[in-house]
Image 1 (cartoon, rainbow, N blue to C red):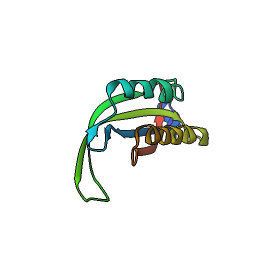
Image 2 (image 1 turned 180 degrees about the vertical axis):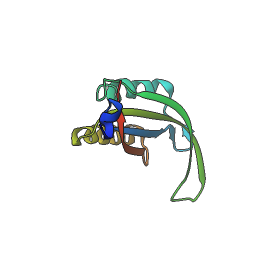
Image 3 (image 1 turned 90 degrees about the vertical axis):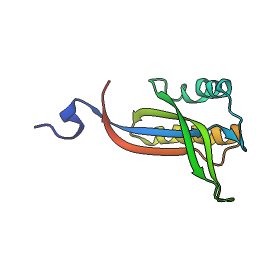
Image 4 (image 1 turned 45 degrees about the vertical axis):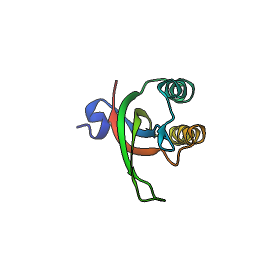
Length: 117
């Protein structure tokens, strides 16, 4: 009897969710056009097999002021090979977004999954 991913005719992969805030300071500074450019130039070329983008509403506490911050966000979900190269590509995306759009952080959740297409 097959176990693990083989039982589902699936491959071991990782599911990564990246949470991109769109405020720069207290204003929305990352426009839809800016976001689309970043997605087309930086994210999709690193993961050309596909990904999903969802609009979100982020809530977080500013560690410096203690204030609750609300901002529009983009959530990218992707499935990719479970290997160090994938993690490197994800880290590049996070670092590029933080630098380009002056962000304190980009949220990241990674979990092992079984996936098939």
